[in-house]
Amino acid sequence: MSTKTYNGHKIEIEKNLEDDCIKLYHRITFPDGRIEIADLSPYNTNSADLVAAYIELGCPTRESIGSIAPLNGHDVRRLWIEKFANRPMPTV
Image (cartoon, rainbow, N blue to C red; front, side, top):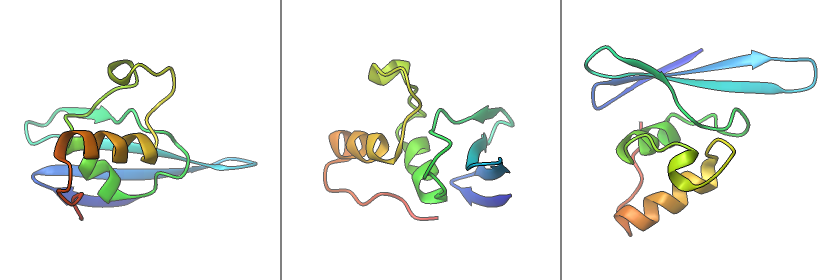
């Protein structure tokens, strides 16, 4: 498990090894102690920077963007540009 901290949020990315793939689970512990599993795709999202951007975006859900699937890296980057334009995405 990889653990990073961003603006008081603890970001944990857990790898679940399966027979044919690796699934990633993104756990966020908020400064108030609340824990949430991010609505991020378990595939190709092994980046604490991506989770930090997700946090800055207010932890959007698939429902909030009109999707039936978890958000992927492309979704987060698109939402970032829509909200923050040229501001660089966070790095952890």
